[in-house]
Amino acid sequence: MWTGVACRQSPPTGGEPMGTQVVAMVAGRAVTKNALEKEMARRGPGARKEAVLDELIRFEATLAKARASGFDRDPEIVNAIERVLVARFEERELGSVEFPAVAEDEIRARHAADAARYRTPPAVRGTVLFLKCSPRMGAEQRAAVASLAETLRTQLATADAATIGRLARENSEDQTTRYQGGDTGWIPAGLAREALEPAVVEALFAMDPPGAAARVIETPRGYHVVRLMATRPAATRPLAEVRDVIRHQLALEKREQRAAAFRERMRAGLDIRTNRLVFDAIPADPTGNAAPPPLP
Image (cartoon, rainbow, N blue to C red; front, side, top):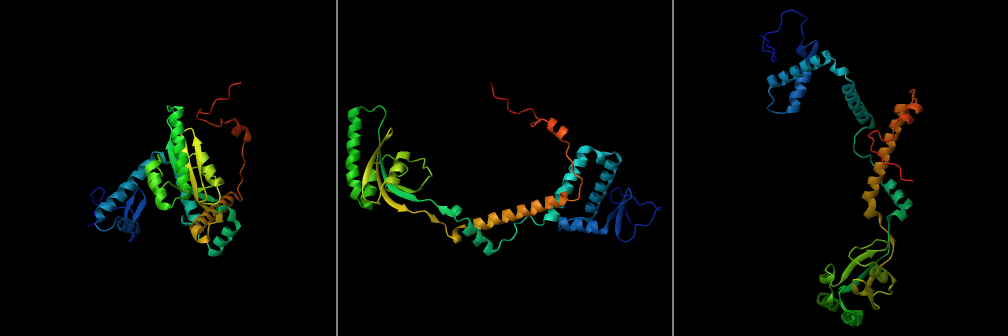
């Protein structure tokens, strides 16, 4: 004999038969065989049939009571349901959240059209030995540091890599480059390096050709002995380096175009009007946190 799981009592003998596809009836709504099987499959191995049915009945029973109380007509609930409805509808109509496919010829065309966007600026690479001067130094002490800087300039101008490394380790007080042979790394034009004084960067870009000479740059912090080691001209990054970046950008554009077309379709054929009088009367910041007007 069939036993209702929710209340563990035999079903009433009256009423219409439920047929072969209905497992339970709750307030006139059917819990179907298909619904029970899908929920058991969703939960995976180990799902107890009786427990799953009991939860489905509990859900339907609670839903029936909520509707009977008018809860489903509460404006906040209606708004929440409508938002879920719109979100799911947009998801279905716009398709997968994955990016649209981008063809190779599209990538090549964008790389050619936006060549300037993928250009790297000219860059320099130098050696810097930094001799620090304390603000409390007297003129004689500072002059001694300046003399040492000039000596290092002469040595640095013709030094090989091994000698440069030794000079940096023994004399430079720049902890960023000291144990890298004074190497600044590549410095692109227009991009400041926090570890280097602007005057040092400016001097490196002004020196030419690489390795020809060294200069002493004086700043409030001390003396920088500078030698230009290499230059790199501006160039367009090859397609192989930026292919993935371009593909991602094109996919984003395609997705946005598809979304924009969808939004236009949703408006088509509908009577849409705006009441400007009411709209303009609403404060721009309804929270009241708008910035106060400037003082006269």
